[in-house]
Length: 329
Length: 296
Image 1 (tube, rainbow over the protein chains, first blue to last red):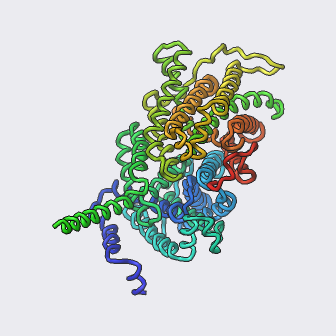
Image 2: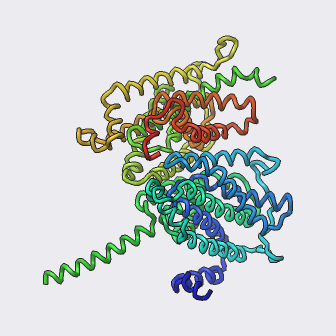
Image 3: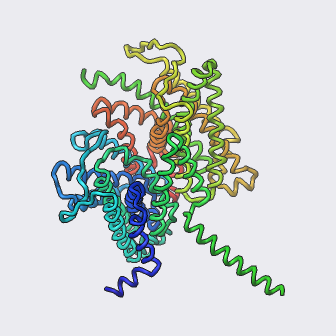
């Protein structure tokens, strides 16, 4: 077991973990705690989408809907049927996964723009359903008074406690994702992303792999949605629109495709950016649009990836330069 | 009143909105045929066309036709800028990046419009009088006839442009075989630029025609754009005729649905149709020249 843990975490990772544990204690600012809680929730979402987008190479612009399904499942179960939040947490992920399976079979036959549009359409349908089935979801105003997340009598009722809860869940899911990526399914999904034809010729069941990854990534979104409902204690349709889907995809792109740590860092970065932009009132969204475009033009492979390559290039360039100088001497 | 007695009214309003969907769909198809890019900011051209005309007419006191002309020119310039500043730098990226960039442009355009022209919904006066014409006992707003006539004219213009003129053929050539087109002296970038200009112009005209009938606000472009895309897929992706047929079909079905299901669900109808058509017949009603290519 110890050996296993040692293999899983290098020293560097332990440093990150320590920093995450201590950060809110060193900096006891409730606003920062709240931001980190939000960033953690988005990071769970982005991690899930990263499996689908980065590893399986498929596009989804409907992940906000799975997030919403998770949030509404928790909201309805806890407020209407007073189910414990811990049970609702798992039920949310299960609901999101089942719905993802049902729509995944037909939708995932599509590729590229058409897949993007179909998932986007699914998101819009979800929003309309939520707004219109008022008896179940409370319509436009949503559901209020969702209880705090509680486990065995311990209630996560401050931002600090929620911070540890969410980053704990994120850590667990990250371990799961890391193992999944290295498993047979993970390697198969990488093959599918590279070339579906080549993958199917070596015996990978392409459709099955795609649906499987889609379901897992929807379950991640379901977990995130459940936590979001508990933290915000409300669920209303505005929170689960197209703009959230765009934001999550941006997190994965900025973090770098095919990378599990990237989306988490990008989630923190973009949450912080949105918070700063929020200070500019009505100018915030136009600026946000411009920043999105600039990020895509200058860092289409993610800030981290590009940075790594650039650093390596720089180092090798200096190395070559040194060699050249030696040769000249 | 039974649902059936509403049908004639719903049919006329469905045809009107269908014409608008058709124009938006034509915009998508024009850009796609030249560049294989789907411009998700297409709906914003429509919104900008209506709102800029309103701004010139009410704020500047410029006569109606001149205001409309100025708005179309401005939107075409915005479309060209979009191509130069956003799409051109990303011409070598994979599908996802231009898609997200045009979505980012859509966020920028709609919110900037809200910032400059205000967030209240706007409505233009009709082109020729408010008094509805009675045709066969059904009142029809004159504006609907304007919309239909304009759609018909634009369709013919685009048909001539893309099938009967050298420019249209060059645009199509640069899309089907970029290298070959470059070899015979067609500048691909110029063709994509022209396509963005044309589609922005068509979008702006759609916006000017629709604003007297439906309120246009700074954020109504996105949904209109998406429905136009659905229309283009429904009719047969990549065909001008398909875009028009899909537009009218979608408009009529969506409008008719109000008689049978609660009106709040109206916006979901288009997307349910989309999912069904993608599942059952992805190449659309008329079939698509692009759909059997491997990238789909």
